[in-house]
Length: 468
View: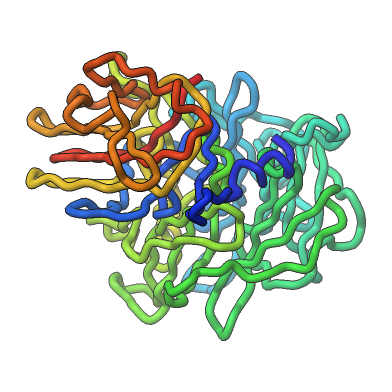
């Protein structure tokens, strides 16, 4: 979808009485903010929590080590790719034990990862390793598969990474053999000692970058855009609204694949003044969640999305860094639907090797509208849609439920779609249609401004869409 089409989707039309109307089309909407919500009574937005799973990869090769970090993951046709910095640090001598390199791993399922011998870069006299780059930018090399339909074959994969004067652009035909796209940096305003990233924004038809800066002494995030990956606009700071400043060490921002008009991010939040485990370097970290509809204005949750948990090593300085990328992976149980996998670091500065642990989350499960057993409801802003079914991603208890009323913009129930006519919806489903007892056809309301009233009890509502 190109920029003009997306602007049309996200714009707010106005009714005759001046009320703003959200134009949804048939896209999926997640409740990661209150963009669609007009009022709530007895319900609240609740942040999700990923479930820790197995260790996905251990950074135990001689060219890797305990400060291996800045991991990138993405799906590429029939495989998953992973890139990361191979590095090791001797805390006693306060020195790196070998030069930093860029390493590569791959997986068929996102669960079991292997480190292929690519034979490209020599380390201590041998190319029998998984190193794909050892030049400028090896500190924080962040690659992606370019979704731009006009991408040149020799730069089907691209990356940004920092050098002395800013961020440099890299290209590759196969994701393994990399070259600088030009000798000079492409972005120079910022502070780049972090995992800075860029990608093709499919919804808006442009490249977008998110990188580190320091604002009033606090680690923060800047963004800029480009049409060709080499010439970038002047960066601007992300707008947090009323959320107070916090040290955001990385950003891990992606356009969410199931709803690419939404940006979601998973910054590592750094609290430098705290020490939980005896170590020469102070500071503790966790992972937070944020979402945006334009890449500039964000809702950032103050509560942690990923807590350190009981493992002492995760309370060391600079742990709990969420990798850049969300993968859709199979559930461990064959009867369950696919889930989202996120990958979070542990063991940084601890022992001889770092690790990356997989965490899972239900699809769209970042935030929900939650009602407890006492029940509650919320009403949407006026909206228009395209489709013949209203489908929900929700979960209830055995006694819980969700019901939906379709209203005119003044708040009156439309005949056939009143709350008492809605078939009570319960269970746990990613994409379940809502039905009304009289067989009313919601497709007859396409293009007409309406509101939705959701009545809920002991339930979570994650997302909705109108299906064609």
